[in-house]
Image (cartoon, rainbow, N blue to C red; front, side):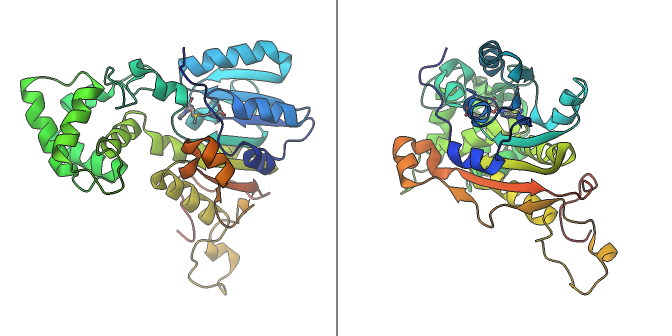
Length: 322
Ligand SMILES: C[S@@+](CC[C@H](N)C(=O)[O-])C[C@H]1O[C@@H](n2cnc3c(N)ncnc32)[C@H](O)[C@@H]1O
C-alpha cells in the first residue's frame, strides 16, 4: 500500500510529555502508522484508543487491535469529534491525548491520493476519501475565494496571480491532475532563492482547505480540554507556522499566560481559571540526529501541557479576558 513507512517524529519527546502510567487510558488522535500508539502501549500497562480519518490508517489500526488484544481500540473519525466518538463507547475521561498534525508518508507517497506535486496523480487530497476534493475546489471556487485560501493557508504572496491563472486555465479545461496544477503554479510564481518548489505553498493551502485542517485543530484542542482528567497530558506536534500558532495561542490562553489588563483585578474579572499548565515554555524541536535521519522532522514542533482541575473554558474563548 505504501512505498516508505511513516517514521514517527519526536517520538521519545511525545512519550515523555504524555508520561503514560499503568492503568491509564490514552487517545492517539492521529493514528497514521501507529508509531505513537505502539510506543504508548510499550511505555506502560495502559490502554490506547487510536483515531484517524483515513481509511488506510484505520485498516492499519485494525491490525494493531489484533496484535495488542484488548489494550488497543481503533476508531474511524476526526479528532475534532473525539468527545462524541468516545462518549458513544462509554468513555468520558482520558489521561492523555496525542496529536501529530498533518499528512503521513503513506498519504504523500501514494500518487493516487493526490497530496504530492512530485508525482502526477488525481487532484484529490481528501484524507477521508469522501466529500469535495481539491479538484472540486480548484474547478469551482470563485477567484477571490481561491486567492484567499492560497494566501491564508499557503502564505503565498502571489496568491492573486495564482488564482487568476487557475480561473483562466479552467475555462478551457477543468483541472484533473496534480502535475498540471503544479506546472501552472510554477509558470506564474518564480522560484525562490531557498530552492523550495513554487507549487509547495499552493498545494499546502489546498490540502488545509480540503480537510479543514485548522478548524479541526481548534476543535480537537477544545475537545481534549473537555476530555482530559486533571493531571492528564496533551501533546501536540505541528509542522508549519499556521498550525503552531493555533496551538501556541491555545496553550498561552488556557495556561493564563496571555496578556491580562492588570494583575490587580479580582480573579472573576480575569476570566476563567487556567485549564492547562505548560510543561515547557518553548516548543520542543527535533535534534540534529533526528533531522539527519528524518528530514520531515526539521519543521516539527512539540507543545505539551498538563490539565489542571479547572473547568474547561467556554467554547470559542481564546485567552486572557474576553
Ligand atoms: C503525521 S500522521 C501521524 C503519524 C503517527 N503519529 C505515527 O507515529 O505513525 C497524521 C495522521 O493524522 C490523520 N489526521 C489528520 N487530521 C485528522 C483529523 N482531523 N482527525 C483524524 N485523523 C486525522 C491523517 O490521516 C494521518 O494519518
